[in-house]
Length: 202
Image (tube, rainbow, N blue to C red; front, top):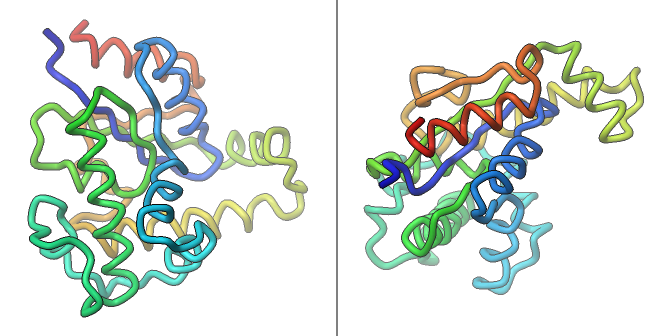
């Protein structure tokens, strides 16, 4: 019997984390959720995905970690909470429900910390050297080479700010993850193989 039920993946921008997540999902035959978390949350609370993205972009380190953890949410989202608090609690509810419902992969959304009290959650961080990330940003995301470096910094800052605001550890603190993989050196396929093998107990 597999030790793990859920895989969570945090990743640097353009490190291939989303691609790796989808590859692992194919290898294991389980669903992979990324932006879908945002869309489910938006639909549930009757707000637009764009509104959620705006809140995420303006997140600061003001969130209360004790309120954010899904296991400690008593009555869900309330009007008394700040927009950032409400957003994270709402996404945490969705993440927790998915983890309870099925074996799956969840990309981003601070899912590893939301599910940190579960023994069956494998937490992964994907990173890469700047050269590899710039190359992927230009070739796969159609970002101009002149702008690539600034785009990397912008999205890394956004992800780290959202994570740091909702967690008791820092986004790039490797001790906060079970495994950290360098996709620039290993390649996305090898990273996916490693994650799948660990998940299967090999």
